[in-house]
Structures are given as structure tokens and as C-alpha cells.
Amino acid sequence: MRVILGLFLSLTLAFGLGTASAEEAELLFTIGVHVEPLGVTAQGYRGGRGDYANPRLFAAHVEYLYGLAEVAEHHGGLLVIQVQSPFTAVAQSVGATVLADLASRGHEIGLHFHEDAHLGADSERLPPETWCQAMTEELELIRQAGVTTPVRYWSGGNLYPMVLEAASCAGLDVYSDWKDPRRQVSHELVIGVVPWRPAGGPDPDHMAIFATHDPAGPVIYLPTGMIDPQAFRLKRRIIAEEGARGWFSVLREDLLRSLEAARPGLVNVHHFTVHPGEFPLDLIDEFLTTTVDQLVERGLVVWATFSQMADRFREWEEAHPGVDPRSLGGF
Image (cartoon, rainbow, N blue to C red; front, side):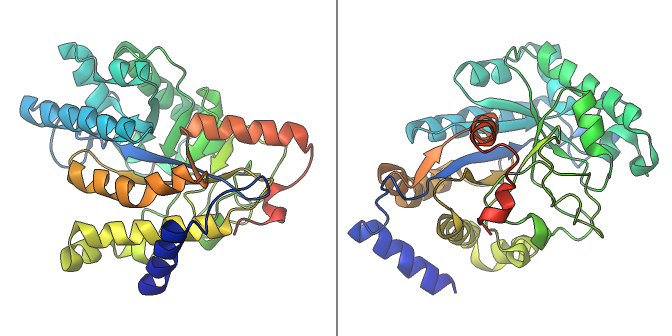
């Protein structure tokens, strides 16, 4: 499959088969950045290995964020950087302006919410008001770190059926990156390129309501794209056996599948996610140079932050009131 997809993409790029016309679809694209909860959160719990209280680790990840932003900007792109209190609290305490700096350059700042790191074990048993309070605390720390642009997006809380209510209470309205953290895999019902408004919160064992569009829903969900869920589950093995380039081959295939699924007249979205220090910046630059740039030049791919994607979807909704976008393709 990788060989076939790679050959098709090579032909597309070499011979211009993908040149966009007024009748062809465009794919909105970005790179998300998950900044993990390394250290003690504002709510007193410890998350992840490592600690941003270590000045060397904090400085290294700040440098990586600046470097990654420069790579994206070189290609005309913008990132969505998702943070939480072990990082934002240190940034605020030492006067680091990295989030404010990147926001001023057009990159989006969002919330990455590892629920157990903020609410403890069995956080799914807590009421949405408690989740809302923790999310609000996290958003306030982002603002204290100097971010003045609106924070609308979050990732996380994927096992909590009332996460939509909690996030809406905190003022968030854009969501993505759903996966079952127990299995490290997405669900076939949420794989695609067309956004929608979930009719209810996620339940890994019963995802139908989350995958159902509700025109009055408070949250816009942005699917990751036509990802290969099995490859994602085997990410560590792929990298161990094939190196980081092996994983970027997977990302290339995901992008091609998303392009094939994109439909004219609909909002189509796709992104991939990295973590600070996870991949060499020159490898990301190479991927953008060899794969993304030419698609952008042909009008097939358009850089957009998550909020920009959501706003495009809102515009589509206004032009198509009451229409279920998921009934029109993109899967």
C-alpha cells in the first residue's frame, strides 16, 4: 500500500495531476504540537516523565518550539501549540514569552488537557463543573503566560462522555485528536476529513452519538484526516524498525488518503501532531519541502490553524443550514 500511494503522489506532483480547479476540493492543513504535562500541574497532580521545573528541559523545549515555528513559517504555515500547566506555570514564573511570541506571529495556542494530570485517577466520575473549573484554571495560566489571542481549542478528555459540556463551560468550542488512550487507537467512526458538531460526548465503546452531527451542538470537531489507525497504534514499532523517516512515510500516506477523500463544496481538514523534541526539525522541513509545498502550490492544500478551520466550517454551515456534512462524503 505504501508503494502504491507513494507512486500516485509522485505522479501527482511530477505531472500536475493534482492541480486544483474551481470544481476540485482543497484540504486545510496544519501541524499540531502536544506539550505534555511534565511535572506537577496547577491542580497538584503529577503527569508524564520529566519535569519542566528542570531549566534545561524547559529551555530545550522552548527552543524546539521556536525552531519548529520557523520551519512552518518558512513554508507559509502556522502551528497549533497545545499546552498545559507544568509548561505554562514555568513560563509565567520565569518570564518566558515563547507562547506570546508565537501567538503574535499567527500561530494558535490551545489547551492540551491530560485529564488525570489535572483531576486525578477516575476523573471520568467527576461532574462537568469540576472539569470546567480545571480547564478554566489551565486557560488562565495560558493567559498569564502572555497569550492575549482567544484560546478556543482543546485536545484530551477522550474517555469523558461529558467533555463537551465541560469544555463549553470553559469557553472552548473546537476539539480534535480523539483517540482511545487505553488502546492508543482512533475509532473508524471519527476518521475522515469533514468536520461536524458531535451530538454527544465520546464513549470509546459507543461512539455513534459522538459521530452524529447536531447542527445545534456547541463544539466543532475537526477530524485528523484519513489516518491509518493501525499504523498509529504501531507508531513506536514503526519508528524503532524504520526510523523517524518510516513514520513520515506513514504521514505522507495519510495526507494522500485525505486528499483523495476531500470533496468539492465541503470543508476538508487534515493535520498531524508532534511533541517538542520528538523529531529532528530538518526531517519536518524535508517533509514539508518534498510533500506539502508542491500541493500548496497547486492549490490542493491550504495552511490553516484549527480555529481558522472551524471558522471556515461555520461559514459553510451558514450557507447550508441544517445540512449534515457527514452525509455528503469525506470518509
